[in-house]
Length: 82
Image (cartoon, rainbow, N blue to C red):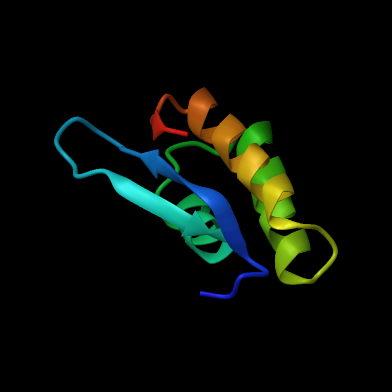
């Protein structure tokens, strides 16, 4: 895990009551979750994916992606810990 892509604090999400919680430690984890697990394509999900890509390209810092990911998780009602 690259410190340039790590979140200062992990984000915990849970996609349903019957699934285990997922702890998101960095931008790579967040991007993977956004691509594979988010239930709907929304504007906040798109903004979060864009923010992750900006960090991966070196155009933004991880807190930008973390804030956008948390906003998308809140909207999707899957945020369990921030």
